[in-house]
Every structure is written in structure tokens, then in C-alpha cells.
Length: 518
Image 1 (cartoon, rainbow, N blue to C red):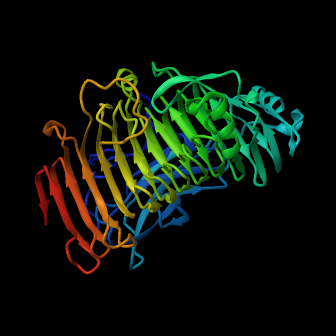
Image 2 (image 1 turned 30 degrees about the vertical axis):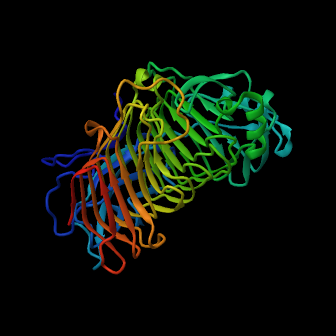
Image 3 (image 1 turned 45 degrees about the vertical axis):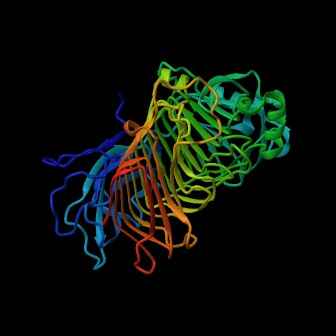
């Protein structure tokens, strides 16, 4: 397996990598930040993005200072920072030190070494005949620029609105959309032919091509597109509700393409852009690894307008994104019964930090999770008025599992774990029920939710062997009169879960074992 990140562990310290937040560290007067890494996909010729974990004891930590070769280059209140304006092809050593309320820094800091990429050749689409008038169809011109792009090169989309049909990216290139530039999808279905083998709602099937496609679907897992970046300060815009309706009429719900679809990709980066008006899911990646998505603004309307969908993929970094949709802001998936059980490719190690979700159905795991989902870490997110808040969802037919989930230091209005989703439930049943286990939700501010309502609803299956198992809810603040439901669970602990008036919420616990309320 390719290493997804560059890291340097301190001698004598057992390190569990970035996705495992409970790593032992040597005690310091000011605790050090942990597990400093650089996602490989985020390295460009002129920038490097750093990610790290908070210290074990971070109550008095107010921020972090970032050093390049021993010189201070930036400060961050978040656990990420992008160092800009670096010369290409140079090697640097970066250090991050934690800063406490008194302004004192940790005496030591994690270090990581990396080299910026060499400067590649630029291929401006104007040189291939493209016109940014919003009316000329530029599919051929843009594809010519992509095909001509040499390894390490950049296809450049300048200021203007460039209408296009489906385009196909390749390995070892960057698609860059400049500020003021818009890559606009046409609303003619003929521009999205020939049909492509894809995966939607858990099934592999033929769909219209996505607006931006990279790779081809291969359930064997072999990567066929690598070292690809889609970035800039501009916009990628689809045909929106109008085009959704056209494609629905032509090929039905599951025949639509995505706005951006990555299949069997490795070392993929999408950053800095406005992503909007997809006729279906906005960013969908399948059978992929080492995917970094950051500093994105995603806006979409209508059913099936998910923001980001990791699907049977490993090692995802999602941070500094703002998402507003009419469906799931993020939906972590791994196929649907029975095909998802047969393909059996889990989604593992998803890190979601410093994101804001303003409109949508949920920050979700499922409901297509037949291949399994594990090791999801969510931190410092603002989860606003989403219908189901943070949701883990499945049906009795899915099979698979959801395990090792951590959410902490977030504001949120609702938490739901359900086993009776009543949609997208065709297909033969899995050989056994799914299960949820080992979930920790801590230091959550739910005080802005509506008073007197059920805000935490945790369910398992009636079969005791498939009860939802080992759930810890700790240090959670609820509004006055909040209600909590627990059903078909084993080993659920509530520790310092209180309403705004310091009273305990109203509990409704049924058909469960070992539920503790401390």
C-alpha cells in the first residue's frame, strides 16, 4: 500500500498516524501538537499544506505557529495551514508549535520534510481555440489542451465563462481555473456520451459521463489515474436543476453523471474552488486512495445533490470546506447489497476537520455501507441546520459495518443513528445484518437546537447480536428539555451530558443493555 502522507515520528514515541487521535506523547510543559503530516496530493510547485492533531491536553491551547526551516511563516487557529509562495523544486523542513493562552510555545514541535514539485509547463486553453463568452462550446478545445499537457503540466482556464461538455483528465496534471474563470457544464445530454461504467447508490452501472471525469471504474482496485490536481480560485458549475430534470427524463435517477467523478484514483487533490449546481452528486470518488479536498465552497440544490461522497475509498482528508446542499453534505459510502457485499471494499480513514455545513440533510455515513466504513474522525466542524445532523444510517438488508468513529469539538443540532432507512432499498438482502460499534461523540455544543425535542436518537437492530455497541457521549451541552432516545443498544455511556439549566435531558431507553448515565 502506498503511504498516504509524509510524516516524521519522534524517536521513542509510538505514533498511530493522523487518523488515530489517541496517540501517546512525551509530556511537555506546553503540550506539543501531534502527527504533523503533509498529504502527498496537496503538494504543488509553490505550496505545501500541513495537517496535524491537537495535543493530548489542549484546553489552554489557542493556536499554532508554523515554522519553515526554523523561521516563523504563519499562525493558525486550526489544525491545518497552507504555506504559499514557495520556490519550486526545493526541500523544506516544517515545524508546528502549540501556543497557549499566555502566549507561550511548546519547547519542541513535530517536524516534517518535503520537496515542492518542479514547475511544469502551462497549457492555456485559449491557445487551443477556447472562447470564454459563455456561449461557445469548448469541449474539443479543452480536451485538446488536456491531451497535450505534458507530465507535471497545468491546463489553465483563464477569466471568462467556458461552456463545455464532458472532459476527461489524466494522470500527472493539474487543471487550474483562475479567479474569475468558470468552467460551465452544458445542458445537452449528447455532450455526455458515450455512457460510462460508474457507481451510483451502490450499484455499478452505465451512466452519462460526469462533467469532469478521471479514471475508469475497476472493482479490482487497481489505480488508473494518479497525481492529479483540480484547483484554483474560480468556479466549476454544472447544469443544475434544469439539467438534472433532462437527464432524469432521458435515463432515470441512476443514469446521471456527477459534476466531478474520480474512479480508481490515487493521490488526488481538489482545492480552492467554488463547486456549484451539479445535476447529481458534486464530488464523488470510487475505489480511490489518498484524496485531499480542501478550501472548497460547494453549493447545490435538489435531491441527490450531495456535496462530497467518498465511496469504497481510503485515506481521505476533507478540511476548510463550506457546503450547502438539499441532500447530504457529505455521505460516506461503500456499496449496496448484494453487490457491495461481494465487492467488499470498505471506506477507511476519513478525516473531516474545520468544515461548515449550512444546509442539507446530514453529515452522513451510509446508507450504502455494505462494504463497511471505519476510522472516521470529525473535528472542529460547524454543523448547522441539517435535517438529520450527524447521521449513521442503514437498513436491515445492507450488511456491512460502521465502526471506530470519533466526533469532537463541534457545534451541531442533531445526532441520529438509524437502521430503518426507507429509501434506496432495492436488491437482495445481505447474508446478515449490519452493525454499528465503537463510536465516540465528545465536547459537542448542541445548545442552539430547539428546546424540548429529541436531539439524540441512537438505534440498533432488534437482534441482540446486532445491537449498536459501545457508544460514548461525553461533555455535551443541550438546550432545555432536550430528549434522548436509545433503542436496541449495548454499552452506551452518557458522561456529563447536560441541558442548558444543568438538568439532565429526558431519556427514553428501551430494549437496551448496559446504558450508563453519569
